[in-house]
Image 1 (cartoon, rainbow, N blue to C red):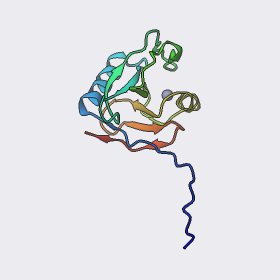
Image 2: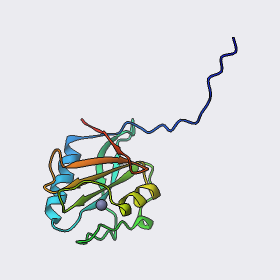
Image 3: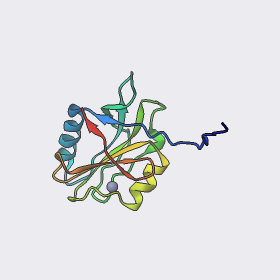
Image 4: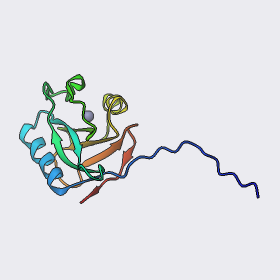
Length: 137
Ligand code: ZN
C-alpha cells in the first residue's frame, strides 16, 4: 500500500485552562497595585498539569510603572510553573516586543491582563507570543 504518514515534529501546545478563582485573584492583584504593574508566575494543578490554579510571586519581582520586570533567575526549579502573568495599566492587552522576548525565553503559556482588569480585558499567549484561547473552568 505504501502510504507513509510523514512524521513531522508536531508542536503539542497544551490546551491550558484557568480556574475562576485564579483569574479573580489575578484581577484583584492587578487592581491592588494599579497604576503599577503586577507580575507573577502561573502554577498548574498536580494531576493533569493543564489547569492554572495558582500564582507564584517571584522574590525580587519589581512592579514598576514602566514594565513589570521578572527576575527569572530567582525562580524556583519547579515543573508546575508553566508561564507568566502581568498586568498592563493601559486598556490594551497586546503583547509588546519586550513581552514576546520574555515569553520566548520562559514558559509555554502567558497572560496579560489590561485595565480595568476584568472579564474581557485579558489575553493569553503561547510561548511564541501568539494569542491563544484558554478556557475558564
Ligand atoms: Zn507587557
